[in-house]
Image (cartoon, rainbow, N blue to C red):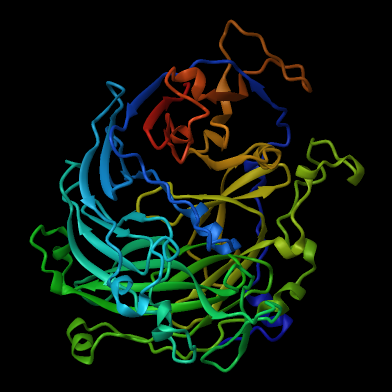
Length: 584
């Protein structure tokens, strides 16, 4: 087990995130506001409204609020047909409905029910959980697509289901059939040294990522599911002043994230990694799949000391996680990487399992000292850039970078050895997005005034910096988003053609990186004096202008989800879904 006890060891895993200078535009001038009316197609959702679960009164902590902000309400099927984009939404009665958009006729299909996914785990009905409020013990529901025939859902608690969906490329409205359901054991049964009460059997869980991968040396496939949980570990003293500490399996003490609610609860953040194996690959595409052929292969639990902004699987390495945590010295403890299947099942599946040792993966406090802080941070634009330089007195609040203790760092964790493979400090995580089916999400960070979108790569031998690469740049978007205090969603199209910012007053701001200038218009660059062939364009989309039925004072008309495609922006409220055609 590797503990980073020296600067030299820290330097082995720490690398600096560097922008590709060829993808930066130091001559970028400004966005030009263009009043354009965009074509819009609307589908009203009759009857039950789209479900939008808000934090309960007891879910007041930062990590709990963060889990709600990470939850999606509009689910785009990247494995579906390309000509008719497919979307799914969960209604208030927990029915999952499918909607498709015909890009030729610009019309929406009627919502079609495909599944009912809201059944709580059996533990909520057990005598030990009498008095446990379902809303308090749940996060928003989750939906992830594993391939064109399989989907994964969670009801927001410690359980998930694997569904056979039929071939969604051919028919996205086929009724789904539940093939396998798994209730994650109570936290106090995943590790032996904690003393939680039985009331902890039901706890909230949000699926952060899920994937399907081919198992090595077998004909089976494995579904990996990564969940974020935040659960109480003990009651604070009456004065609420004491710190909560927990004994880990390795004997170390770890200070938990803590705070005082009405009940004085102390919360702990965990990442739970569940691997489910199917005996034969063809079972996954077989409508008559035998549920008994699904076996929970392994459960890993990672105890997190610090705030977790996001986590996902490394697409290039089967057993590796990427965790985005706040601060430069959080710690992660693997205390239940133990096999939980029987010996007979293990022999049947022929899957090598690695036992857990309960030790700490890292204490990376030394990593912050391995290089000067300025070298660890994403480097600002080069001095020779044409951007004007400012002194500190001229800076506004949105110009400033977060304090060092608020930096977000990315950690690559090996699921077998529990080693820290690589880490980098990225300053500020703006958003994440999945732009390819089955791939790892890209992530966006602020770079000076710009925003850089990064993609994950396989780490080359001896080159930790190859873990990520600069995909594209959103000019000035880092500064723009910092100036919006009421922003709700940030994102961009998969090709980086435009960035979007959606606020809480139902306005959508679109920032096009390069749009052709019509021949009848004469625009010149203010610096060079040359005629501009392309301009950076800003559009402000107000639903009050596009939709005569839209009432900005109606809570049902708040934007609760979006999807940015290259040529269309999709927006979801509780009562309707919109497709807004982007200008050419």
